[in-house]
Image (cartoon, rainbow, N blue to C red; front, side, top):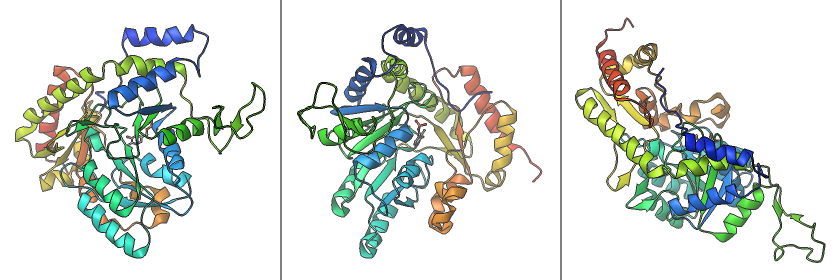
Amino acid sequence: MIPYSRQQVTENDIKEVVKVLKSDYLTQGRVVPRFESAISKITNAKFATAVNSATSALHISCLALGLRENDYLWTSANSFVASANCGVYCGAKIDLIDINNDDWNISIKTLENKLKLAKKNNTLPKILVTVHFSGQPTFQEKIYQLSKKYKFRIIEDASHSLGASRNEVNVGSCKWSDVTVFSFHPVKIITSGEGGAITTNSEKIDAKLKSLRNHGIIRDKNLLINKKSGPWYFEQISLGLNYRMTDIHAALGLSQIKRLKSIIKCRNKIANIYNELFFDLPISPVKINEGNISSYHLYPIVLNNENNVKNHKKIFEYLRSNKINVGLHYIPIYRHPFYKKYKFQISKFKNTEKYYSSAMSIPIFVQITEKEINHVYHTLKKSLSVQFNV
Ligand SMILES: *Cc1c(COP(=O)(O)O)cnc(C)c1O
């Protein structure tokens, strides 16, 4: 099977992990801070906090930004469930926003209309989670302007988009947001096995995040309430969690992040080859907007031809039976049984529905071979002309 994405682990990555295994500290050692420095350097953010997953990162970002029971958290309808679940963990109410028809990112127009209405109804969100779908940045500067007007906080879910940029501003620099969250799951741009990180330019938010990932504990002598205790002393000041990243994971992440530039280059090269090969096929690949560099975590396409759309499932099965493990990113969040209780009206998500009925993610990863790319092209081409018995 050719997967839709997979990790690349080099001999050097393995060496770095083994070094930690032979050292004194498997966790809470020196490697996590080094990984954090590398993340903040590469994104241009002042601070970075490594945690054990992007899901954890989203959760404590919500806590650090003060999301409470009955607040609203909004996110894109076309994302992995974790982008919304973080709000549920905090007891917040969830609302979802429809996407554009060409980049499948959150629609600014829909967002703006929704905000206008929410202002009238006193249901404005406390937090908006923007998702850089497939690795392409959203129109983040416009979202930032709206956040000033309507007074909400922004978490960028950049699980797909480490190494991407918009108008030469790196994703993760938090120029247009409060915090940015990354995932280092094996299918993502770089991996630490499992892992995540949060970048921010706010010292205060950063301190909160570092405390929240470690049970809500602080050790900074200047911040302690009881300053006169002994050298053993620390304080728990809030209800945190154990979301720490281990040094074993950080060593893998740190070794991988050194290759980030070449990984992004390689993924863009593969995407360009696909773009050229697919030019004549009745499909549309993701549209990259002016000023954007995508990190191409995914290479999503939609079927254009009505007949093909009807055969969406068959085409999917055809590709899989020909050893191409296409994916569908994503099942719209409102379609999951867990989210039924929120009573989302499907009619409000026209573009998400249209996308869902005709989309698939084509294999893209660093080690994909020319032969595999050609196999994908020929099989896809064939599948689009097969007369399936419906
Ligand atoms: C992968 C992913 C997550 C979750 O990442 P984990 O590190 O597996 O917790 C969250 N949001 C999006 C958009 C993702 O793709």
